[in-house]
Image 1 (tube, rainbow over the protein chains, first blue to last red):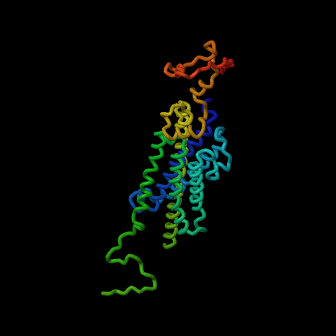
Image 2: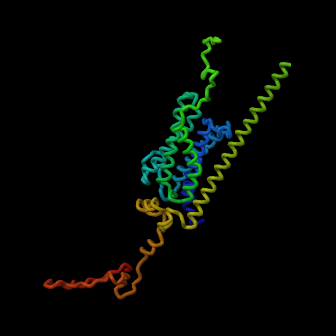
Image 3: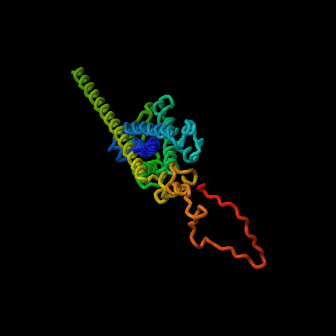
Length: 202
Length: 133
């Protein structure tokens, strides 16, 4: 314990960073299931929304712990500016900077959910899609700047939630844009406007 | 009769709403507990890795880290001095009459062979200083 004593905050930061990536991947997967029309949605139902929201908030807490505990690290001695402003730190500035961009992006887009009425639901949905970009930046940050990036256990822990989330994301991006229910040949695909009088042709 | 139905429907809606709230609270509670458990497990893995001497940033062996760790060492010093480095910086103990005994293998000990026609002057004897002094 005495050996690890000076590194406790560093260990906490590393664990929180890994947890943040795992949780964000799970949250992304749950978020993609909310809007999907396939079988998983039927399994999760409306619970996916509660799961997605909670996971997102826990992810943001983990990101905050990941950055804040580094402030007390006796080796790196980063300043508050170095952990909050991208590309200002001396330690792997590119990879760390990408991680800071990812953290701020996830925080801004995640918390914007509570202001979606003001932003406008449609505009907010468009903005919210960019969460995936910041999630990818988070993965790049972990693999580029992570102390444990070369460790097998980390790759396995990351891959377990990340691969399914990536498959769901690719399915969303490459799949058909809108999966509407097939229109019956006897019924019109869309309801006519209320001022249109439907006449029986027979 | 209609009033009775209306009250029943209201009660049913209220029960449904309450059930949904409870379900959401259960999901939230489970998610938070699961996240804390995940964090604890990850913390334990990193801690055991560090205490057992297999931490990629602190370990002196290059086999555990891979390319990424090698890059770390190139860019900045290790968090703690490696045992080999400590041995290198330890003061030398005089073992020979000069206070220093070369451990270089025989192939590195060479003799000077002056070329023909080139005069070789013996250098003046300078006081030999040792690292231990």
